[in-house]
Image 1 (cartoon, rainbow, N blue to C red):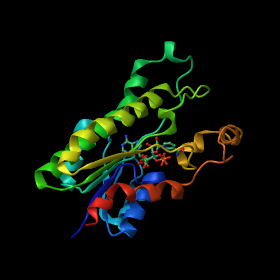
Image 2: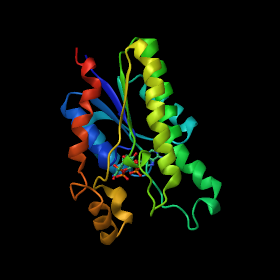
Image 3: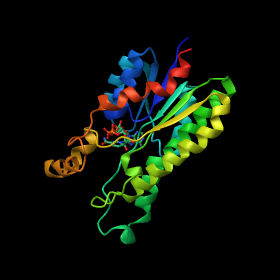
Image 4: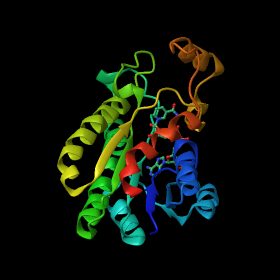
Length: 226
Ligand code: NAP
């Protein structure tokens, strides 16, 4: 039977690699994006799903997206990222920056997961939800001060556990992956010098590639293979 997945933020980076790996494993994958239409369409052409433009930090946009795609067996909440914190630190931080970052890195997962889970329960789908968190949910990023990003991703970890214990009675698995530094476009804003500095803090002396992350995805849906 056809298995359908939605990967948010799948026009590039970890989301794109995830969508392509799922397609290689026989999934039909819908490819969400916000700006990069051509790139998303190129991914969707290889995954057999739709390229869907929707800002996942906006609950109404997420509802419209789910109306278009219908039920999914697997949801990967991948879209996210840290914008550099405005100058001045937390005490001077404009609260709209906080709201924007929490909406992108935490609310987005709640909006998408609620609609996906409702459909799974209604259709009796023993599905899977995977949240892409970050190492910054676990350690403080002293120099870069991406405070709302870290707080949002830490919230995502607990969100994963909380809905996981609720949804397992419907046969729905919820898991979280928290990557460290991964060489994607998200790193473009940093100088070579910054990146070498990050790498020095990593025991392996280097970051990871999308190919280090993607093999963790199938672990969360092995129960769907039956
Ligand atoms: P990336 O290369 O910057 O890709 C981000 C993706 O998210 C793009 O497809 C982008 O779409 C999409 N996106 C951004 N805002 C969106 C929104 N509001 N609605 C829908 N889509 C949106 O990022 P990445 O490095 O692959 O990161 C993917 C996830 O892993 C993120 O949640 C990030 O926080 C997490 N992560 C990354 C690293 C790392 O070092 N790379 C480390 C830890 C965690 P467009 O192309 O259309 O803009």
